[in-house]
Amino acid sequence: MSQVLPSNPTVAAPTAPLWLPVFSTAFVVVNLITSEFLPVSLLTPIAHDLGISEGAAGQMISATSIAAVFTSLLTASVTRRLDRKVVLLIASAALVLSNVLVALSPNLIVIMLARLLLGLAMGGFWSLSNATALRLVPRSFLPRALAIISGGVALANVVAAPLGSLLGAALGWRGVFVIAALLGVAGLVWQWVSLPRMAPGRPAELKTLVHLLERRQVQVGMAALLLTFGGFMTFFAYLRPFLEQVTQIGVAQISGVLLILGVAGLIGTALSSRLLTWNLRRTHILVPLVMGVLTLGLLFVGHAPLWTILLLTLWGLTNSVLPVAWGNWVAHAVPDEPESAGGLQVAAIQFGMTLGAGLGGLAFDDSGSTGLLLGSGAALLAGALLIWKGLSHQTAPALEPLDVGNGSMTGWPGEVTE
Image (cartoon, rainbow, N blue to C red; front, side, top):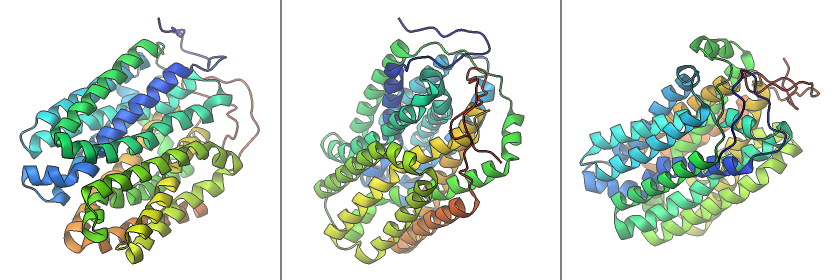
């Protein structure tokens, strides 16, 4: 039987970490990210089966991101009276339904509608993830909890791309989405059993988002999020066509490359908490900087398989730190409105990835890999520059008390002060 948190407006963080629901949340994250990025490894067969271009098929990711943008902004206010466990379960159910619809879809229109549903699930789930972690562990364990949840992203990169490619060859791309739906059912059951009831925090309204965006640091942070995640997706959404057409390797080799990329991401996520503890600011700047340099490096060595694999391994290792770094920064910078700030963070990430996938598809169809890599690298380097010049990482000593349940938190270690 799951633990029931008090239903009063102020709910203190638990005195001991609740790791089982944290891991169940991470498992759903694995399913969400796997479902979001399955088209990356299946882009060619999906495009061939539906009779469309690879650039058009890549818009499956854009459709998901568009829906996630709006959902992430609205979740805190629309669901302000609902138990947070119920909201998370609804998002998990939408994930399952989306994958079932994709597997059964007869054309691109139905697929796009199903992917919009996935975006609703992603926006709702991700926007509450930071605030959920605050409910499940004491504040001293929060970086570890966020790393575990973000580790679901890295694990999804291990699972989604290589297995999607291999299983797609064996079962067809529709069969891969059936498997994704079954994994979603497992995650839904695990969360239903393990998550405690979580009373809604301080009622959030749409004007709360406006007030947050009036803060200069939030403005700079959201712009940097757009650039870094947009730059990442510009290249990543079209990784398989790049490997096929530029590096000129086959499906089996592509699966191996994607597996290496995913394992590197898993290692990077495991190291991320230490890097952030070492120096949040330096890590935050170096991640998009290194990714941008590596992406541009593929302009010169993308035709050579060994060099391409080396650069992509380093790229995956570095990229995996990106969501953990941003999750920690947002939690530090906006401790008083974790749900609304989480919604803004997800909206910026998804909007950035929407632009990245959309513009990347146009660039790839128009000018091939050159335009793709130049656009991706430039956006990542611009994001690094913006973080370096405009984002504050100053910290202040911790204060008491901690108040999580109503959406406010004072005394967060590392709280950013203006």
